[in-house]
Length: 407
Ligand SMILES: *Cc1c(COP(=O)(O)O)cnc(C)c1O
Image (tube, rainbow, N blue to C red):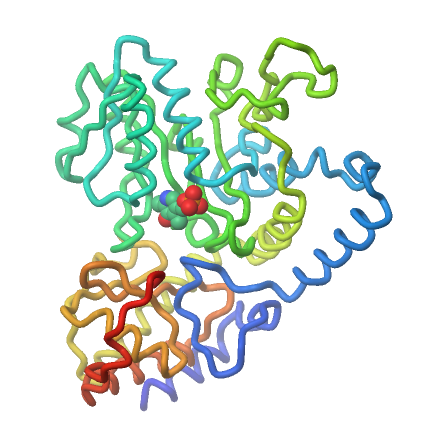
């Protein structure tokens, strides 16, 4: 049996196969980049059209109340909460992941007076590391990096916060959230998890792990659209004393009292800063509803099956590539990454064939398997294309070797 034949059988038995029709994907494209920008749900344009024409056009300013615009950030946050093992009042959809990192790193430092170190790992997602720099420049933080195997021993009495990305953006390698959270707490530190590459792809249990803070992205597996609002989680036990530095009026206890003095809202609303992006929240809500409807447990099961099937298909074509993602599917997120000195050109040659993955400098080809809308047939076809690109050497063509600014 060819991989294509086996894919046919697997797709016929796939309980999630019908959900592909709930997404708009262009003909002839195999989309292996849903971990970078999730696909467009079919319902999103209609919902946005309604919000624009009816709520904005007709309702005008009345829609802050009548169309639930005020409540949208908390409402969408509460829908994200069960996807990440949080209670509804612990999550809010707001700002970008970068801005939410800043707010929560600063808040954690304020909760651990006398400690300044923010511990992370080298090679963490750039913005996570960069967001420490601004606080360093203000004299509030010092950055400390330790390789994954040495994080526990780097947790000394100067560490205020351990900040890690749960599923590594480049390799997909997972951290043991419960064990590292426990180790940090034993050392007197707080923990902030970046769930950008986990949310909507695998089950997370923030409260089961006793996590303090988390952030994550709305435009990856949650399919909220480019620049979608991100989310922030603050464990209930920390909310009353949380001091976040972006003390804007939407985080005020009574924004429309127009008082001169800031008083943070009692709950998770304190994480808000300025007027929320209502259109972006409306699009994000469609994506979150759809991912919640499919269910994270089923998505995770399928994502593991897809990546295993992709590897089997590559093997059927005798392709051997250096895999930088963990070998066991239980140890990785919903992606496979391969190292090759010509990864950039190989990625471009695949894109020219309609297989959209991405390149991560300096030498990684990254293929994401968003389980909500990919089929086993996509896996078989993508593996065949990759085998053909490698065997034919077509990646050597000049057009595939000219670098664009955004990859
Ligand atoms: C995608 C991603 C981000 C994105 O941050 P933005 O502020 O939305 O640009 C942050 N952290 C991680 C780990 C990511 O994967």
